[in-house]
Image (cartoon, rainbow, N blue to C red; front, side, top):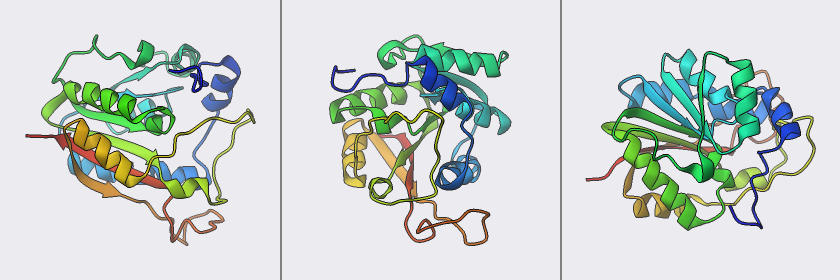
Length: 221
């Protein structure tokens, strides 16, 4: 990480706040469709949760029947994950270094909102190249990211008890496709979840504009 874009998540107070974060409002839409998407595209049950934070997405994968290991660059977040889930598997990966994990072993790499906080296109490419090396031949990366629209709309989004701002990096669909091309990954399908009027939230415009993009990626030739 650069001095201008530090690891704001490696902070004990923020870790405490995120450990209590649930799935209300707009944030609910980020995860709602993942079980069906994963079931459609992923064979096998071996998974890595890249950028697992306090372990919510790792536990989510385990509930779907995966053997899931969570990895993160923030030790305070991992400490909360281990407290909540003592039987879980959580690993610190300094600077996102995945070299300790066996190549060509995983059926699924999930990255839930991790790349919102990766500062440069070059760094994104390098990380996706590392993730690609973990996949079996028919493995898939499922990358959930914020859409540009999330930064210009007032929505029923999540909040924590830590009111300090967190820096995100705005990245368009075109930008992500450029990253995937450079990493030699193939975008198989893109999902943009929309809210349903029947859901128990006071939606603003989430029924017409998606706050999130979910990319399913596979290996290139």
